[in-house]
Length: 629
View 1 (cartoon, helix red, strand yellow):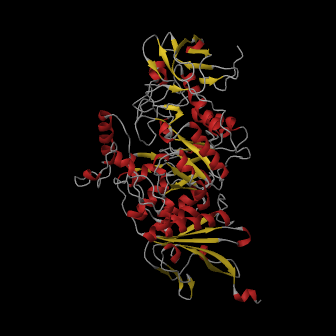
View 2: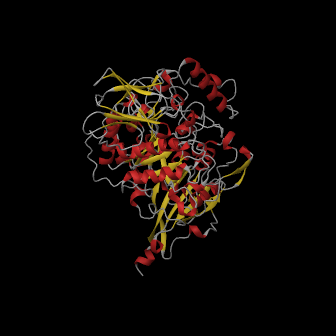
View 3: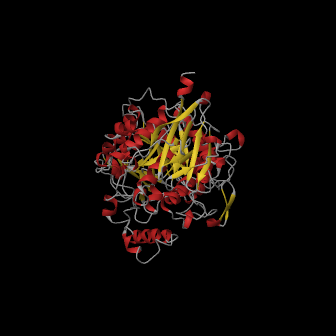
């Protein structure tokens, strides 16, 4: 038999006709393919048992679009664990897909490297009114023009119901049918590359959703009791029979890179990916992604609540070899500075200037110190890591919903503070990330939504309320009725973006566009050099950063979250301009273009006057005396 297979598992069309099926199913003794609809149906073909619990066989009559299930031991019929498409959802039949039929136009695309990226987290179902790949595709040119460089798409692995975040996926290889067909996803990526945008996909490799997961019908060894999981049974990466399980996820990582031309992955909640193997599964995923890219540059970003910097250290130094880590510290400190509230997991943050200076210079705030909220030490050392390895954000899907009302941050702070924090995040040398609509101050909330069966929906709703009870303010009786019902379709609908707000909120949109242009085009702000920034605390709520350029071509960024400040005296050497030069304002968050009130000269005869609730960037220019010397 002249078989041509790309992956060790799944249904693959053969060049000489038919489809070859291969599945890991050590629990049953007999596995049959039932062709239910489309070409070749109806038909039943028994697969041959192979070593290590695999079953395989060629089904000549199965072709593209054939719908099928596996029948196990003449008993139940279940979808393929490696189904490339579930047109009727995770409880329905799987469909044979031809991944090679799509005509890609991105042959010149070289991929993406971490430096210089501006990430944009997006949920396809709420990014547009239609909630489809096709509708999202229409906005790609606008996103690129704004200054976005890398899209981070929230999970699309198939899940049940009419709407959801995607983190309870059960069909790891099947792009959810709610947003379109697999080729619509490919077309979205192809068009993104044409617009100069990279695309990374958020994947959940730490658990499966509670509804539609049939893996145990094939083998209970997909999961382990060795560890405790926060959202479901942990995946078996290091126990007995873990080899095929690891193969399943490594194949999935390669699959997105090869068949959808994805530029990398964002790994969800990596602290829940338990593995004591000689080679950690994250290291193996990184290697497989690089191999699958065949020379294209890729990025792997990890979410890691404990802040273990080992994940982004080189493999040869004992690390896992990933590229970047989400920086919760920046978000938490920023929210305290903007809102004044530091309850629950904000407890160990004061939002003070020194916190922001330290994060700009060193990434995480907590790198092994005691952390009161968790009653333990938090983080590991990361002082020597490059700034770009830390992804900083003011909003993301989790943090917006954890506000209780699903409110965007502009409704919880003053306009001036928000503009100042935006400038700090977008000009700092880390890797900034925006959440969809943030660039135009979207008024759409972002709630938790999930269309589960009634009994499960009730449990999910109770779980959300219990989680948010850690915030004393949200646990009050008057706030409980304000919580949105995750199962109500209106909760989902209210989260959809309104792109007309780009015009109505032009001040915010121009602010983001101009900052991102300055970040991209100014050689000093774009450098992201390790050790290239120092800072000083100027007042209780005011800080300054000095970005060191070549030959003294430095930049200052003054950020004041407090009232107007007259710094007199000003005994801070970082404020001194280069010899023979003076500071000139190059950008201000108080520009009327951003709905500000104007910015007088900062360094004057009255010494430094720094406006309140503002950020101002300055550059050196030659003094008049030097010009005429």
